[in-house]
Image 1: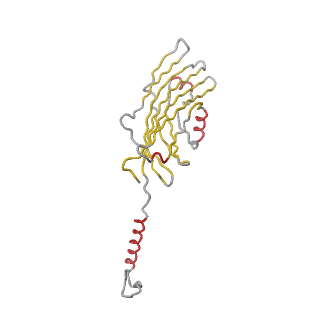
Image 2 (image 1 turned 90 degrees about the vertical axis):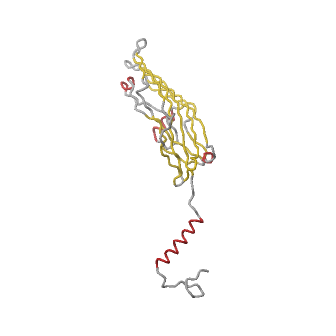
Image 3 (image 1 turned 60 degrees about the vertical axis):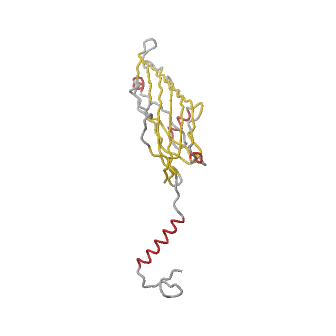
Length: 236
């Protein structure tokens, strides 16, 4: 037993200065911290690669037009635990992450159509917005966005629809896009336990989507691959 004075029962000397008693409390607290260290959570890197091929057509006279496009997009994000959930933060692109866009539109009446190449006019970007924990799984929200003002779409004043994921937490735009999927699934999810094991978890999602209104048709075929892996030596 550590004795603070000559009293054989170890009674604390009341004349001891307050700062000495405080320092003893700090030492005791530090001992408890060493016995119960804070939880350490690994960080992960999420990589997405999306390829979308689409066609659209307006039969509304006199502004008939149709177009085809193919876009390959890449995105990377960091993922880490935060109070029982996950947070996402965007990472800079690496070499090879550049987008690829091939876009052609035809305007005019059949037999007198004018072909227009728009590869350099459309610049879509893919963004991961948030991740949810649901029953042992991680569900990822992502979307593609760009201001598309082709000659035909600008005349028609119709908003262009891009692919997006489904989490049931993205609001009405997410629900409307989901309703147009007639084959496959745009829900990107994986087992939380699987991503903690090296070399991580990878998967694919494929779906077909269509939007049909009076004088307007737009279809998409989407292929998405993902890879989620622990960052080497990274923990929080």
